[in-house]
Structure formats: C-alpha cells, structure tokens
Image (cartoon, rainbow, N blue to C red; front, side, top):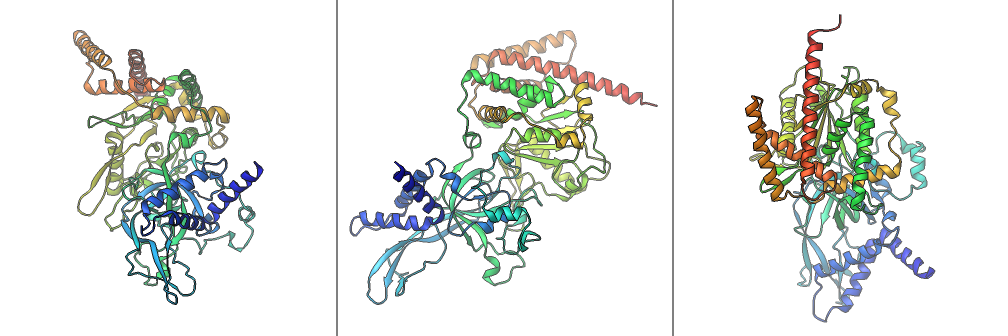
Length: 600
C-alpha cells in the first residue's frame, strides 16, 4: 500500500512539473495500440489525455499541488513554463479567433529515411529534435487541428475565500513578503505582459492569460467563469499600438493550454460541506436573517429584504426575465468630500464599507462602485471594441456578481457626458439585466445576471426594483460606525459562515416554478384587492405592484428551499410588502417634517 501511494504521488508530481513528458509517453502507448496503417485520431487521443489527467488529479491532495494564477501577476515569475497550472478566471474576450495547429507532426531522419510521429497538441514550443531529425511538412500523415483562443482574467471582485488555494509558499515567496532582495521593490521588468484595458476594474491587481481551448465549439461565453487546468507557457500575444516589429516585444504573454475546464459552481466554491437536508434550510435561513439583522443594527425587516436580494437571480421564462431584485437601502450617513476615495473602486464611507465587508464574507464576488463624481466621470462602464479589440468596461462582470453602489459620496458637482452614459448603463443593468457591448457598426446587447445593491442617504437617484427606509435604530447604529469599528469587523465563526455561504449558493441556483393553481389564486386575489381598493376610494394595486410581490413571494419560497411557490409564501410576501409600504410612508413623512422644521 505504501509503495502504491508513493507511485501515485510520483505520478502526480511528474504531471505537475513535466506534463508534456507525461503526454508524450501516453502518445507512444497510444500509437503502439493503433492498428498498422491507421493514423492517430487527435480527438480520440485528446480524450485519453483528459481522462488520464482527471484520474490523477482526483487523488486526495493532488489538485492542491498545482501552482495557481491568483489575483496578482507578480507571482508569474515563480511558475515554470511547461508546468501544469490552475486558473479560476472570467472570460473577458472569447473572440481571439481560431488557430490552425500542427497537432501530430511526421518526422523524418535525413540520414536513414526513418520516420516517426510526435504529438504537440498542448504546446506552442518548437519541438527539440534529435540530430538528423526534421519535420516533414509535406507528409500526408501530419494532423492539423483547430483551437480557439480567449483572453481570460482573474474574476473581478472575487473574494479571498472563493479563490483557489495555492500550494504552500516557497522560501523565495516568504523572502519576497519581507522585501528581501533587489527585486522586492519597484516595478518588475521581467513580468509577462497583461493588457490593463481588458480588466473591468482599472488599477486593481489581477492576473490574465490567453487560454487556448482544444475542444472547438466549447469555448465558454463572454463573462462566464471557469476553472482551468492546463499547461503554462509564454507565447506571442496580439500586437499593440506602439509595439516595435521585434517579435520579442510582442512575446511573453501568459498562455494556458487548457486540458480540463469546468464551470465555477456552488460545489466548487463551498466544497468542504455535505449538502444540507431539506430540514436544515430553515435553520440556515434563520441563521442568515439573524446575522444580517445584527449587522443592520437590529432591523429585522431590512434583514429580510437584504436576504431576498442576495438570493435573487435573473432567469428567462418564456422570453421574460424574472427573479431580478435590485434593492435600495435608505438611511446611511453621508460621506464627507474628504473621505471620498476619488477615482478608485473602493468605498470610503465607514457605514457602507461595513455592509460591503459583511457581504464579502457571504458571496463569492463583490464589486464596489462609489458614486463619486471623479470615479463616475473618468471611468468607462460599457465594454467597447471600437478600437478593434474588446476593452473591458466596469460592468463587464462575472455572472452573480454583487455590485454595491455607494450613493452617500455623491456630492455637488457636474456629471459630464461620460458620467451620464455610465449611470445610464448601470440603470439598464438594474432594470433590464442587459449590458451593451459597443462594437464599431452594431452595438450588441447581452443578457447579464448581476445583483445591484444601492446604499444611500435619501431615495436613490437610480430606479430600483425595491427601496426600503431603514428604521431609526438601524440609522443610529450605522451613524456610530467609524473607521476603527469598520476595520475591526468580525464575521461569524467559520463553520456558520460556510453554512450560510452554501445555503445562499444552493438556494440561488435551485430550480423553481409556479404551480397553475397558485397562479390562479394570485390572479383572483389581485382582482379582489383592486376591487376592494376601488370601493374604498384607495389607490389600486398596479401590474408593477403585482410583479414585485410575485418576485418577493418567489424569493421567500426559495429562501425556504421550496421548489414551487406556495400559498404560505405568497401570504408572507404580502405581509412583508405591507410592512415595507408602511415603513416607507412613515419615514418619508418624518423626513418631510424634519425638512420643514430644521434645527435652529
């Protein structure tokens, strides 16, 4: 048993450090079993390689031995070209096109006339040929295949807990953290290149790579998230304006030849826990509500609506988008001009940063957008390919990203044309869940799935699906939060935090439907409520009101892990909406009185 364990460990180590050597050996074995006169089938052998790699990496602890491309490009110098690497990434630009690649090359010995074949599917490196051997480019036995190339970036806003864990740091890494050595300060001139304009959050640390997918037709779509395992190389990248004709100037782009890639799912994000039984969902729902209520100063109603927001997901039902639930929480203290982090994507108001820290512990990715004039006016929110290459916009984000908008730092000033276009783009995402990709001749609108939470002092300048005024105790609680208390934020204990994370991910992605009988009951009740309001001379419920209550009811059911909308959840949604309406009416009246009678 010990010998087998050692052999497995050696095989994994060889795969990580010399994957091409492993693949060459597999190819020799494959050719030995191929019938005489029958050429190699690249697709068939590619499947053999994938199954072999997947089998080895399924061994306990094997994945953890693979170097990781994280959220910084500075560590790329520690990754050896030709080794296996992992990259959890977002597809920023899938349109780098197809490459025709010599997958199986026929070699001929110029002295003896002997021939043999070599496999070069997962590398762009030139074959190192023994003396006397050369590639016979005219041979009919050469096999060419197509592969598709995409520009991928580390997932914008990916929180630390949702990132891949890297192997234990080497001594040089530890020394680097201590700033020991001549290369520990200043810019690194030997780093592989990345295109800063292709990352949505300009100025933020990130990694990027050209990922080459050797399975035509299976390239992930733009803004999708994938875990890639492949062979790392440095390759020639796209020529940029200002590059010289010297190929060395265009080289040294990080490149990954993908052997395996999978979508990032709830199980990959929170994989250490068994799936909860149905009876546990209510307990976890109550745990999440209690936690959110505590960080909102005891506002139970706000906690309910914030939980529903975190569970929301936009889905298409018969060409209609349902499930989106942008939320505006009103009552946060204003940020002073001095506090505003001008031109950066980071919240400076301690109260809004407090909420951002809370959510960062619970959801995989958060992006902060302060409505500070310099930031809004100087940024580009829409992705654009007007220059011929798709440059990222702030809103080109991965599916299920939580966008936290801080409106408390919006002070007097002027929004220029770009700023207005940016806010209009955000408004379109909120209302339609659509993002425009600006191409030279024809803009393309693509469906997205982003949750938007707006934190403001008064009602937001943006139109949201739902707005809720915080109660007085919550407003007072948030007003007491300062930089010191925000910095000392302490999350729940790790086990409860992971349980809430898993609960949110599983509930958000569960299948859901509305039974016909419940739908009919809702229609009847809607008609009855309108009739009753008409008889009393009160405002009647509109279709928009009904749509919002149905969305709330849908999310209430999902929060209880109900795969179908129940009558009980519909009644609960009606009660929540009634409380919200009463709260907002009272808050607006109180603010009107306070505005009419300012303190002397």
